[in-house]
Length: 218
Ligand code: DX5
Ligand code: ZN
Image 1: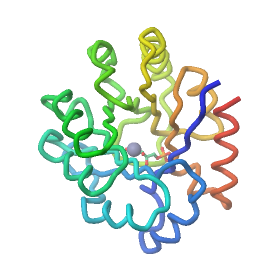
Image 2 (image 1 turned 60 degrees about the horizontal axis):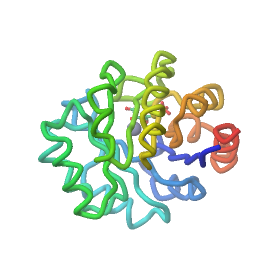
Image 3 (image 1 turned 30 degrees about the horizontal axis):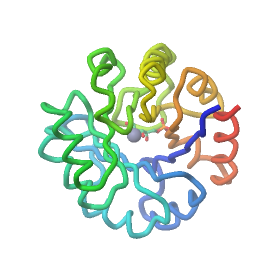
Image 4 (image 1 turned 120 degrees about the vertical axis):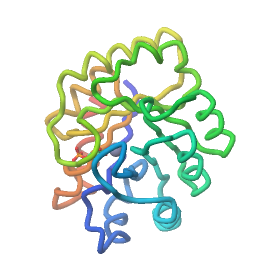
């Protein structure tokens, strides 16, 4: 079995107490930070200064998920802000391979994300250019939405390509991931799991992280 990584999303945490909210997830593998520009998605969240402060405060790596337009121009600043991985959307990048190389040259891992209606097939020949593939399991923009079962075949196709070529690419799922859905994602081939509401709504976030990790590894 693959190692399961759990990256809590702080999108729906208490922004008035963000430092303490980071402490609650100290046992996670990374903090998933959803950057939204009210253009690529109809919501507005964090920018580079906030990401840089989260990098300083969190004791674990920052996994930046950029839901922002014109990624070719806007994404590199998040690598400069200190994010360990920077994931941009395929739909928002004109030259994803060039951008991934630029992110890697700035010391970040490079991820590429797909909205639910974007197919993985056009990427299958270039997966080696990326460290991570993010398969969205809700339409990006908001936390607390229900998991799209119809994304499971896409995860399977991606995992088959990664195995066939023996790549080290991680496959991340994001949206509606919970105790109810994580096993199906893992079985389909995902190995990095983003969960926002499932972890932040739990009374004990550390116990929830443990439970999700155990279910995903089973
Ligand atoms: C949605 C974000 C997700 C979101 C996940 O656009 O990319 O990271 O916060 O939240 P839940 O786990 O509640 O679906
Ligand atoms: Zn996200």
